[in-house]
Length: 118
Image (cartoon, rainbow, N blue to C red; front, side, top):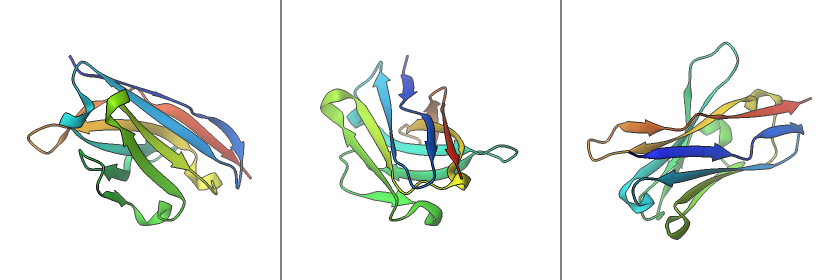
């Protein structure tokens, strides 16, 4: 059973930073491409970015490019989302997800709340 647990959310003023962590258990992290998603109030869950299995490339949605950075430590079974220059529109519940061999994101964490005040 693969489990993902996010942490690191909280409330910050605009311009602040947070680092989210996602610990994967049940299988080695290197088996999965990992993604971050978010659900803002009143909106559907949307893609934030993802990182390859060995961490050699990352992809981001346009709204977070240059502000957010995804990294991973496979030895610690942990993926990170470093968020800088946060804006009120970044307020959302953030989820990490693991993509299995079929290519889809099959495993999801429970989410962690990020609130950015203006």
